[in-house]
Amino acid sequence: MDTALFYAINGLAGQAGWLDAFMRFWSHPSPGWQGLSVIVAVWVWWKWWEALVALPTVGSAVAIADAIGAQLKHLAQRPRPCLVLPDVTVLGQCGGLHSFPSNHAVNAATIAAFLHVLYPKSGWITWPLVALIGVARVFIGVHYVGDVVGGWIVGLLMGAGSAFLLLRWHRFRPQPVPAPVPTAAVSQAPDGLR
Image 1 (cartoon, rainbow, N blue to C red):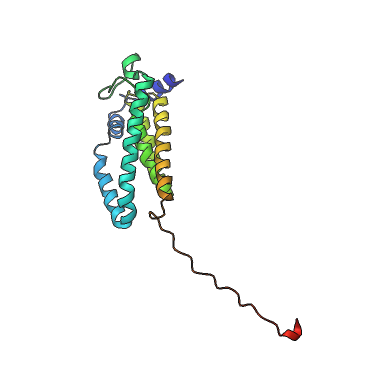
Image 2: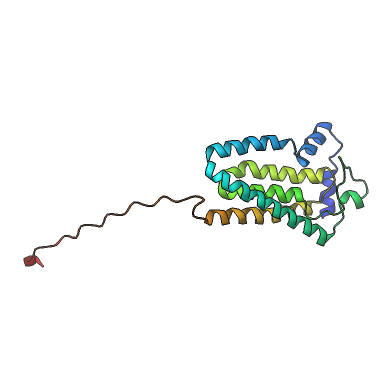
């Protein structure tokens, strides 16, 4: 089934130049770092304390998730489809030897899950981008769909787990101390009425 899904998506490669360029861009979104730097600058301006604490946290989560992905590749040793399947359209370089999981999918899902836990409305933007990056990796011929889904699972666990741990730190988002509730005055009835 994984091979059939791979061919269904990769079979679209080479059919339209604009689609090939679009998928290549999202498979290696290095120009997107400029957009990401603008988002980070706005985040620091908008909620400077959260950004200054969360940025190193999500950076560490991505680094750890990427290392886990690399170790899983070493353990699974699944060859890339562009190395073993016939009639694969490869847009660019095939990449390393091993395919499972897709580290692009791992890293994108780590960031998306982290942001989604901190800012749930961000999911409307981040998760479609995660899906696009994953599909692009299959489209250009370097990963199976199963590699991408495996990467999403690793990234989801790492990103969401890191964000939940960060939210448990009481200094990250200090909760306002509730005002004391005034106690009801106890009315004392005169002795004769008791």
